[in-house]
Amino acid sequence: MTISPPGLTIDLTAQGKQIGTFDVPLSVHDDAWGVIPVPIAVIANGTGPTVILEGGNHGDEYEGPIALGELIRNIDPADVSGRLIVIPAINYPAVQAGQRCSPVDGINMNRAFPGDAQGSATQQIAAFVNDVLFPIGDVFIDLHSGGSSLDILPSAIIEPGRDPERHAANVAAVRAFGSKVAVVIDNRGDARTATASAARAGLTVVGTELGGGGTTSIDALALCRHGIRNVLAHVGVLPGQAVQIVEPALYALKPAAHVIAQDDGVLETLHPLGTQVSAGDRAGRIHFVTQPSRPPVDLHYRSDGIVFARRQPGRVRPGNCCLVVASPYEAP
Ligand code: CA
Image 1 (cartoon, protein in one colour):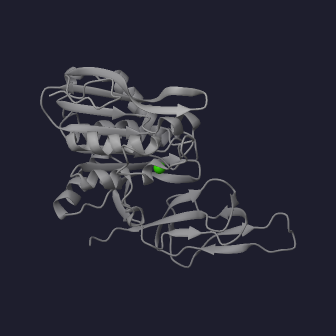
Image 2 (image 1 turned 90 degrees about the horizontal axis):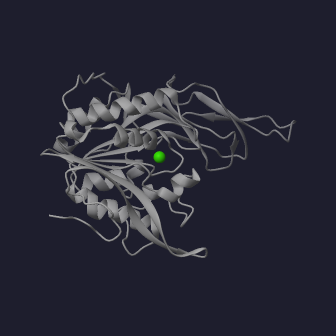
Image 3 (image 1 turned 90 degrees about the vertical axis):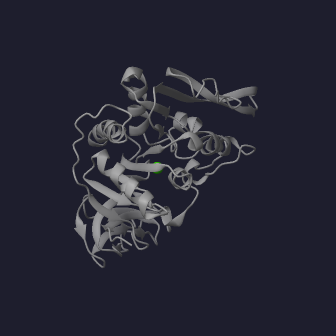
Protein backbone atom coordinates (compact mmCIF):
# COMPACT_ATOMS: atom_id res chain seq x y z
CA MET A 1 0.00 0.00 0.00
CA THR A 2 1.36 3.41 -0.92
CA ILE A 3 0.72 6.18 1.57
CA SER A 4 1.23 9.56 -0.05
CA PRO A 5 -0.86 12.41 1.31
CA PRO A 6 -0.75 15.66 -0.69
CA GLY A 7 2.60 17.40 -0.28
CA LEU A 8 4.61 14.32 0.74
CA THR A 9 7.46 13.72 -1.71
CA ILE A 10 8.40 10.21 -0.48
CA ASP A 11 6.55 6.91 -0.01
CA LEU A 12 6.15 6.03 3.66
CA THR A 13 5.88 2.33 2.76
CA ALA A 14 8.93 1.90 0.51
CA GLN A 15 11.98 -0.08 1.63
CA GLY A 16 15.44 1.47 1.89
CA LYS A 17 16.39 5.07 2.71
CA GLN A 18 14.44 7.98 1.30
CA ILE A 19 14.95 11.64 2.18
CA GLY A 20 12.34 14.15 1.05
CA THR A 21 9.91 16.74 2.30
CA PHE A 22 6.36 17.26 3.43
CA ASP A 23 5.42 20.45 1.60
CA VAL A 24 2.88 22.69 3.30
CA PRO A 25 1.39 25.31 0.98
CA LEU A 26 2.28 28.85 1.99
CA SER A 27 0.95 31.87 0.10
CA VAL A 28 2.47 35.08 1.38
CA HIS A 29 3.40 38.55 0.09
CA ASP A 30 6.70 37.60 -1.51
CA ASP A 31 5.78 34.03 -2.53
CA ALA A 32 2.27 33.46 -3.86
CA TRP A 33 2.57 29.73 -4.56
CA GLY A 34 5.34 28.66 -2.24
CA VAL A 35 5.63 25.81 0.25
CA ILE A 36 7.21 25.13 3.63
CA PRO A 37 9.51 22.16 2.86
CA VAL A 38 9.45 20.15 6.12
CA PRO A 39 12.27 17.57 5.89
CA ILE A 40 11.33 13.93 6.42
CA ALA A 41 13.24 10.67 5.99
CA VAL A 42 12.03 7.08 5.95
CA ILE A 43 14.51 4.28 6.56
CA ALA A 44 12.84 0.88 6.29
CA ASN A 45 13.96 -2.70 6.05
CA GLY A 46 12.01 -5.93 6.55
CA THR A 47 9.55 -6.29 9.38
CA GLY A 48 9.52 -4.67 12.80
CA PRO A 49 8.08 -1.71 14.62
CA THR A 50 7.71 1.78 13.17
CA VAL A 51 9.45 4.46 15.21
CA ILE A 52 8.70 8.15 14.60
CA LEU A 53 11.50 10.48 15.71
CA GLU A 54 10.72 14.18 15.99
CA GLY A 55 13.06 17.15 16.52
CA GLY A 56 12.51 20.86 16.12
CA ASN A 57 8.98 20.95 17.52
CA HIS A 58 10.36 24.05 19.19
CA GLY A 59 12.79 25.81 16.86
CA ASP A 60 15.29 26.92 19.53
CA GLU A 61 16.03 23.40 20.85
CA TYR A 62 18.93 21.99 18.89
CA GLU A 63 20.14 18.64 20.27
CA GLY A 64 17.29 16.68 18.63
CA PRO A 65 17.64 18.18 15.13
CA ILE A 66 21.44 17.66 15.19
CA ALA A 67 21.25 14.03 16.35
CA LEU A 68 18.41 13.17 13.97
CA GLY A 69 20.31 14.62 11.00
CA GLU A 70 23.24 12.39 11.95
CA LEU A 71 20.92 9.41 12.21
CA ILE A 72 19.52 10.06 8.71
CA ARG A 73 22.99 10.41 7.20
CA ASN A 74 24.75 7.60 9.04
CA ILE A 75 22.29 4.76 9.38
CA ASP A 76 22.59 1.80 7.02
CA PRO A 77 19.10 0.54 6.11
CA ALA A 78 20.45 -3.03 6.30
CA ASP A 79 20.83 -2.54 10.08
CA VAL A 80 17.13 -1.65 10.48
CA SER A 81 14.39 -4.14 11.34
CA GLY A 82 11.21 -2.20 10.75
CA ARG A 83 10.92 1.45 9.90
CA LEU A 84 12.23 4.80 11.09
CA ILE A 85 10.29 7.92 10.16
CA VAL A 86 12.57 10.83 11.01
CA ILE A 87 11.34 14.44 11.12
CA PRO A 88 14.33 16.42 12.44
CA ALA A 89 12.98 19.94 11.94
CA ILE A 90 9.24 19.43 12.14
CA ASN A 91 8.34 23.07 12.71
CA TYR A 92 10.58 24.19 9.84
CA PRO A 93 9.84 27.94 10.03
CA ALA A 94 10.52 27.98 13.78
CA VAL A 95 13.76 26.00 13.34
CA GLN A 96 14.93 28.37 10.58
CA ALA A 97 14.21 31.32 12.85
CA GLY A 98 15.70 29.69 15.98
CA GLN A 99 12.46 30.48 17.81
CA ARG A 100 10.11 28.48 20.01
CA CYS A 101 7.02 29.39 18.00
CA SER A 102 6.53 29.59 14.23
CA PRO A 103 7.12 33.06 12.78
CA VAL A 104 4.55 32.19 10.10
CA ASP A 105 1.52 32.00 12.39
CA GLY A 106 2.93 32.62 15.87
CA ILE A 107 1.83 29.17 17.04
CA ASN A 108 3.66 26.94 19.55
CA MET A 109 3.53 23.56 17.78
CA ASN A 110 3.51 21.73 21.10
CA ARG A 111 0.17 23.32 21.92
CA ALA A 112 -1.25 22.70 18.42
CA PHE A 113 -2.00 18.96 18.51
CA PRO A 114 -4.01 17.15 17.18
CA GLY A 115 -3.69 19.88 14.54
CA ASP A 116 -6.01 20.93 11.75
CA ALA A 117 -5.44 19.98 8.10
CA GLN A 118 -7.46 23.07 7.09
CA GLY A 119 -5.77 25.38 9.60
CA SER A 120 -2.65 27.56 9.65
CA ALA A 121 0.82 26.26 8.70
CA THR A 122 1.71 24.95 12.16
CA GLN A 123 -1.73 23.37 12.55
CA GLN A 124 -1.33 21.65 9.17
CA ILE A 125 2.07 20.22 10.11
CA ALA A 126 0.69 18.97 13.44
CA ALA A 127 -2.25 17.36 11.62
CA PHE A 128 0.17 15.56 9.27
CA VAL A 129 2.02 14.09 12.26
CA ASN A 130 -1.21 13.22 14.08
CA ASP A 131 -3.38 11.99 11.19
CA VAL A 132 -0.81 10.41 8.85
CA LEU A 133 2.19 9.35 10.96
CA PHE A 134 0.77 8.37 14.36
CA PRO A 135 -1.69 5.80 12.90
CA ILE A 136 1.21 3.86 11.33
CA GLY A 137 3.58 4.29 14.32
CA ASP A 138 4.41 2.07 17.28
CA VAL A 139 6.89 4.29 19.11
CA PHE A 140 7.28 8.09 19.23
CA ILE A 141 10.47 9.82 20.33
CA ASP A 142 10.03 13.59 20.78
CA LEU A 143 13.34 15.37 21.37
CA HIS A 144 12.98 18.63 23.28
CA SER A 145 15.47 20.82 25.12
CA GLY A 146 14.92 23.78 27.40
CA GLY A 147 14.79 26.38 24.64
CA SER A 148 15.77 30.02 24.97
CA SER A 149 14.04 30.69 28.29
CA LEU A 150 15.09 27.65 30.35
CA ASP A 151 18.18 25.63 31.20
CA ILE A 152 17.03 22.12 32.11
CA LEU A 153 18.81 19.19 33.75
CA PRO A 154 19.34 16.81 30.77
CA SER A 155 16.68 14.16 31.26
CA ALA A 156 14.23 11.79 29.64
CA ILE A 157 10.53 12.58 30.01
CA ILE A 158 7.80 10.05 30.75
CA GLU A 159 4.40 10.80 29.28
CA PRO A 160 1.86 9.54 31.83
CA GLY A 161 0.17 6.52 30.19
CA ARG A 162 -3.59 6.32 30.18
CA ASP A 163 -3.48 2.72 31.46
CA PRO A 164 -0.90 0.84 33.54
CA GLU A 165 0.33 -1.28 30.61
CA ARG A 166 1.00 1.75 28.40
CA HIS A 167 2.58 3.60 31.31
CA ALA A 168 4.92 0.65 31.97
CA ALA A 169 5.90 0.57 28.26
CA ASN A 170 6.72 4.28 28.39
CA VAL A 171 8.79 3.88 31.56
CA ALA A 172 10.72 0.92 30.07
CA ALA A 173 11.52 2.87 26.88
CA VAL A 174 12.60 5.92 28.89
CA ARG A 175 14.88 3.74 31.07
CA ALA A 176 16.55 2.52 27.87
CA PHE A 177 17.30 6.14 26.87
CA GLY A 178 19.98 6.09 29.57
CA SER A 179 19.58 9.44 31.32
CA LYS A 180 20.40 9.73 35.03
CA VAL A 181 17.12 11.52 35.64
CA ALA A 182 13.66 10.76 34.25
CA VAL A 183 10.67 12.97 34.96
CA VAL A 184 6.96 12.34 34.59
CA ILE A 185 5.51 15.51 33.07
CA ASP A 186 1.88 15.96 32.10
CA ASN A 187 2.30 19.63 31.08
CA ARG A 188 -0.33 20.64 33.62
CA GLY A 189 -2.73 18.18 31.99
CA ASP A 190 -2.44 19.87 28.59
CA ALA A 191 -3.70 17.48 25.88
CA ARG A 192 -2.33 19.57 23.00
CA THR A 193 1.29 18.30 23.08
CA ALA A 194 2.78 15.92 20.50
CA THR A 195 3.50 13.30 23.17
CA ALA A 196 -0.01 13.47 24.66
CA SER A 197 -1.41 13.04 21.16
CA ALA A 198 0.88 10.08 20.45
CA ALA A 199 -0.14 8.49 23.77
CA ARG A 200 -3.82 8.86 22.82
CA ALA A 201 -3.02 7.10 19.53
CA GLY A 202 -1.59 4.15 21.52
CA LEU A 203 2.10 4.67 20.76
CA THR A 204 4.92 4.06 23.25
CA VAL A 205 6.29 7.53 23.99
CA VAL A 206 9.73 8.84 24.96
CA GLY A 207 10.29 12.55 25.55
CA THR A 208 13.41 14.48 26.49
CA GLU A 209 14.50 17.77 27.98
CA LEU A 210 18.13 18.21 26.97
CA GLY A 211 19.80 21.32 28.32
CA GLY A 212 18.59 24.52 26.74
CA GLY A 213 19.41 28.17 26.99
CA GLY A 214 18.97 28.50 23.24
CA THR A 215 22.30 26.77 22.61
CA THR A 216 23.76 23.26 22.42
CA SER A 217 25.21 21.48 25.43
CA ILE A 218 28.11 18.97 25.24
CA ASP A 219 26.54 16.62 27.81
CA ALA A 220 23.02 16.90 26.45
CA LEU A 221 24.09 16.24 22.87
CA ALA A 222 26.10 13.16 23.94
CA LEU A 223 23.08 11.89 25.90
CA CYS A 224 20.79 12.57 22.93
CA ARG A 225 23.01 10.66 20.47
CA HIS A 226 23.34 7.59 22.72
CA GLY A 227 19.78 7.74 23.98
CA ILE A 228 18.24 7.55 20.52
CA ARG A 229 20.34 4.49 19.62
CA ASN A 230 19.55 2.85 22.97
CA VAL A 231 15.78 3.27 22.57
CA LEU A 232 15.93 2.00 18.96
CA ALA A 233 17.80 -1.10 20.20
CA HIS A 234 15.33 -1.47 23.10
CA VAL A 235 12.33 -1.61 20.75
CA GLY A 236 14.16 -3.94 18.34
CA VAL A 237 14.56 -1.67 15.30
CA LEU A 238 18.36 -1.64 15.59
CA PRO A 239 20.45 -4.69 16.48
CA GLY A 240 20.66 -5.47 20.18
CA GLN A 241 23.81 -3.56 20.84
CA ALA A 242 24.80 -3.44 24.49
CA VAL A 243 22.12 -1.22 25.94
CA GLN A 244 23.63 0.19 29.10
CA ILE A 245 20.71 0.82 31.35
CA VAL A 246 21.54 3.34 34.04
CA GLU A 247 18.56 3.14 36.35
CA PRO A 248 17.28 6.72 36.29
CA ALA A 249 16.12 8.52 39.40
CA LEU A 250 12.38 9.02 38.86
CA TYR A 251 10.79 12.41 39.45
CA ALA A 252 7.53 14.15 38.61
CA LEU A 253 6.45 17.77 38.38
CA LYS A 254 3.83 18.58 41.00
CA PRO A 255 1.37 21.45 40.59
CA ALA A 256 3.59 23.56 42.89
CA ALA A 257 6.77 22.75 40.91
CA HIS A 258 7.09 26.18 39.33
CA VAL A 259 8.48 29.29 41.03
CA ILE A 260 6.78 32.23 39.34
CA ALA A 261 7.96 35.85 39.43
CA GLN A 262 5.64 38.43 40.97
CA ASP A 263 7.86 41.40 40.18
CA ASP A 264 9.57 43.20 37.33
CA GLY A 265 13.35 43.00 37.76
CA VAL A 266 16.51 40.94 37.42
CA LEU A 267 16.58 37.32 38.57
CA GLU A 268 19.28 35.86 40.80
CA THR A 269 19.01 32.11 41.37
CA LEU A 270 20.88 30.45 44.24
CA HIS A 271 21.33 26.77 43.33
CA PRO A 272 22.84 24.82 40.41
CA LEU A 273 20.62 22.36 38.57
CA GLY A 274 20.27 19.09 40.47
CA THR A 275 20.54 20.67 43.97
CA GLN A 276 18.26 19.09 46.60
CA VAL A 277 15.85 21.70 47.94
CA SER A 278 12.81 21.85 50.23
CA ALA A 279 9.54 23.75 50.06
CA GLY A 280 10.03 27.07 51.81
CA ASP A 281 13.77 27.33 51.08
CA ARG A 282 14.89 30.56 49.54
CA ALA A 283 15.19 29.95 45.77
CA GLY A 284 16.46 33.30 44.56
CA ARG A 285 15.91 37.05 44.53
CA ILE A 286 14.54 39.61 42.16
CA HIS A 287 16.67 42.75 42.11
CA PHE A 288 15.50 46.23 41.14
CA VAL A 289 18.68 47.40 39.49
CA THR A 290 17.50 50.91 38.57
CA GLN A 291 16.21 51.53 42.12
CA PRO A 292 19.31 51.05 44.31
CA SER A 293 17.50 52.03 47.48
CA ARG A 294 14.93 49.23 47.06
CA PRO A 295 15.92 45.86 48.56
CA PRO A 296 15.44 42.69 46.46
CA VAL A 297 12.41 40.43 46.86
CA ASP A 298 13.00 36.79 47.86
CA LEU A 299 11.63 33.83 45.91
CA HIS A 300 10.90 30.52 47.63
CA TYR A 301 10.55 26.93 46.44
CA ARG A 302 7.08 25.47 46.83
CA SER A 303 7.99 21.75 46.49
CA ASP A 304 10.60 19.33 47.85
CA GLY A 305 12.93 17.81 45.27
CA ILE A 306 15.75 18.81 42.94
CA VAL A 307 16.23 21.99 40.93
CA PHE A 308 15.16 20.76 37.47
CA ALA A 309 15.13 23.97 35.44
CA ARG A 310 16.09 27.60 35.80
CA ARG A 311 15.20 30.64 33.76
CA GLN A 312 17.93 31.69 31.36
CA PRO A 313 17.35 35.42 30.67
CA GLY A 314 18.14 37.64 33.64
CA ARG A 315 15.19 39.97 33.08
CA VAL A 316 11.89 38.81 34.57
CA ARG A 317 8.33 40.11 34.59
CA PRO A 318 5.36 39.05 36.71
CA GLY A 319 4.22 35.61 35.57
CA ASN A 320 7.61 34.43 34.27
CA CYS A 321 8.71 30.93 35.29
CA CYS A 322 11.99 31.40 37.24
CA LEU A 323 12.69 27.88 38.53
CA VAL A 324 11.18 24.40 38.38
CA VAL A 325 11.53 21.70 41.07
CA ALA A 326 11.14 18.01 40.20
CA SER A 327 9.83 15.96 43.14
CA PRO A 328 10.48 12.26 43.80
CA TYR A 329 7.96 10.23 41.79
CA GLU A 330 5.19 8.54 43.73
CA ALA A 331 3.31 5.86 41.80
CA PRO A 332 -0.40 6.74 41.63
CA1 CA B 1 10.43 22.20 24.25
